[in-house]
Image (cartoon, rainbow, N blue to C red):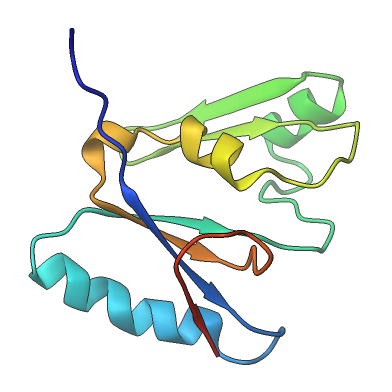
Length: 120
């Protein structure tokens, strides 16, 4: 039986505007230099949309697709509609990641989760 790889989680928590993203953009390259494979989950309380009106993927999603995956040879992104508007579950989001390719998942936000964290 194959053992599943579970990356470590480390959250950075603070109020909006405190500098969480700035800190992470400086820390990630340092961790990569040490050979760590880093993933990031960023929580937001805002109505967030990574897509742009006028793009095919936006139009397909707005037409009613429950999931839209956009792929190129540089990256891919999966957008999933969540009409129930329930609070985001950190561990469910981690399960969506390819954890076999990661050593550490940095988490921005989720300040109420019981994971190791740096509080700014």
